Length: 141
Image (cartoon, rainbow, N blue to C red):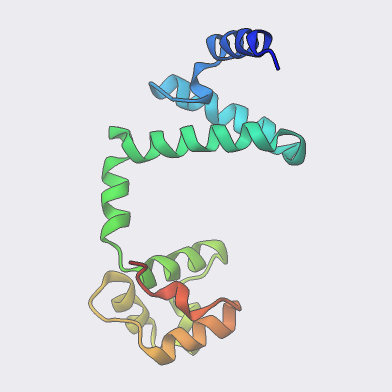
């Protein structure tokens, strides 16, 4: 197989949109997000490009100074609390909405701020309510 034509097309493609393989600045990051929004509209057709672009976006979000504080805070979170916060976000829940699974509103707040831990019973109740595996609440090493 001759690759000259393929190499030429690749050079043209990346010259027009170099951010697809590596994002270098905030502007390229914004362009990558805009393109990703468009590609997702026809996911199956653009899956190979989505996969390449998602790697570039992920790398930028991991390495960019803009995300450093956010990344530090996420790393410091207990996995159980991070999952609990995500569930609360996804289902638009307040501490009061989890009294059945966790106890009082103040206990939920203490769990969220890290002064109390989720117990085995809490994890079991949350897993049943949201139909997720209890293993999601534990640190992956």
